[in-house]
Each structure stands twice: as structure tokens, then as C-alpha cells.
Image 1 (cartoon, rainbow, N blue to C red):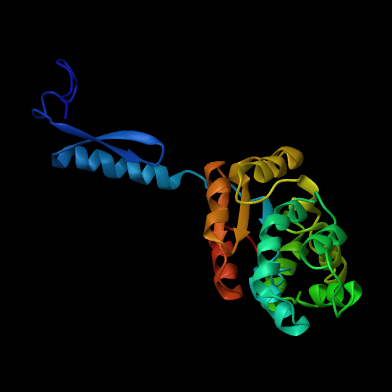
Image 2 (tube, rainbow, N blue to C red):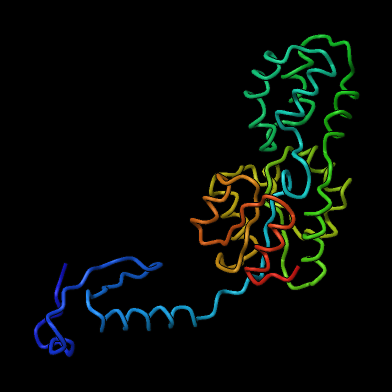
Length: 254
């Protein structure tokens, strides 16, 4: 609680008691009387009249947004059922090996050596690899939104995605992702993963884009925390229609 100092131009109006509150990044003092409520409303109108930063850069997750996930739990479970290997044993080995695989620190063959082919199997490495790649599918609705934004030519479009090297390369080629993306900040190239800050910092520093002009799209809420802290705009992706609406709300043409 506080009062205006003696001699203030507001002192003749009334003895004012004021309370601080937060509005965005500003600390505002709102008096408990009609006169200063009017001042507060005028201040709010002034804030609304200020231009919203223009979005110039779109960063997209890929798995779960543009494509299905590359090698998630459901795909691994299906592999266990298809190739008849012990799920629990494989999963334990996967959890120990996947962070290095996802970060580009070990190859696909090294990952398979650690998780499956440390002993003889009734199936071949080639058949299993083909199965892994076959799990990737496109979400046509969301891809159409991405392509619409790319066709405008108004936005710098890149990915910020977690993906092992060989799977990432396959997905870029198979789904012609270079048609829409200018750059790929993938965990296997950057050697850092979401949700940590580092991969987002690299994307901002390499592209030299102001964070407030960037918008990041991801289907996992946790992955939005770091870019939000860095000042980027974010969208929690749910489906193509919702994504198109939220992009338009940010002034993005799709």
C-alpha cells in the first residue's frame, strides 16, 4: 500500500491509497478510486494500440506435427510384436542408448548393436531398419498448412526437432521436406535436444532473428517452455485446423 507524495498534482483530488500490480513486464500502481481507474483504462488502451511484433520466422517441430514420430514407444512396441523379441530387455537397452542416438553421438548401426544385435536374431538388420523407416507417415492437413506458409515467401522457415541422424535424413528425403524448410536445427546436427534451452539458442544465434519475431510450433507442452522463456512466440499444436487458426491470430498468412 502507498500514497502519492506531498505536493503531487493528484493530491488535491483525494487522499489516494494505491496498490501495485503487474501488467505484462510493467509494474503499475492502481488507485482505489474512479479517477485513477479512468487513468488505468486509458493506459490499457495505449498498450493495445502499440504494434504487435511481426512474425518473420517460423520454427516447426516435425515428429507429431508434420510427420508421425520417427521411433516412439508405439513403434518400438509394434517392432517387438512383429519381430518377436523381448520387449522389456529391448526397452531397457533403448533407454540407455537412445539419448546418444538422438544427439548424433552414435550411428544407427551402433544403436542396433546395443539394443538388438548384441546376440544372434532370427531377423536381419536390414529388415529391421526398413521397418523403422516405414513407421514414418505424413500428416497431410498440417503439411498443407506448412506448405501454404512457405509458398507466401514471407517467412524464414526452419525445423527445431529431436531426431537421430539416419532417421532424420530419411524423413527429409522421403517427404521432400526441403521444399518447405530452409534449415534443420535437428538434435543429431546440433548435438542438443529439446526441451533444453541450447537447441533454441543455437537456432536464434545462427539465424540472427529476434526472438519476438519468431514463432515455434510443437505438439508437446514441455517443449514450449524454453522458447517461451527466450522470448519466442509459441503454439501448442493439436490439429491442422487449430494450427491454421492460431497462426492467423499471430498474423501469419496460411
